[in-house]
Length: 172
Image (cartoon, rainbow, N blue to C red; front, side, top):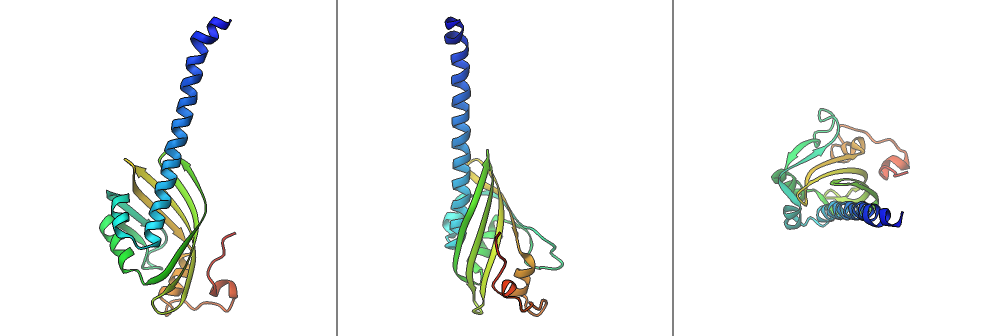
């Protein structure tokens, strides 16, 4: 029995263990790359963002575009321009948690900032990253689009008087 274990089972167990370690490393690398991309957006570091995104990168701002004109599908160049030209200052993201499976990563985050017209803008986000070749290939962003619309287009939406609404969405 010892001979069978040593000659047959031990190599198989070694391969299984090595595969699990490698998968864990891929997931940790994917998670870190995704968070690096969020940090590049946070600091408006477009050079870092340029390096983190694939040439065929696509950014999906999810929601109904007929209601919120800021939403849609954007290529790498447009995404970088959006970060450069954003009407926000003092942007700070707080990473709530993240889950990685291979080259797919989900991140929950909250953001605080101030608009160029001096309105506090704090939103919650769920990001879903797809990576390819060690770079971000696709990014799907989900946020409170009604709140975004109210801040960016106040003539279209009248915020209620609820403190919760005026201070931005709350992450639960």
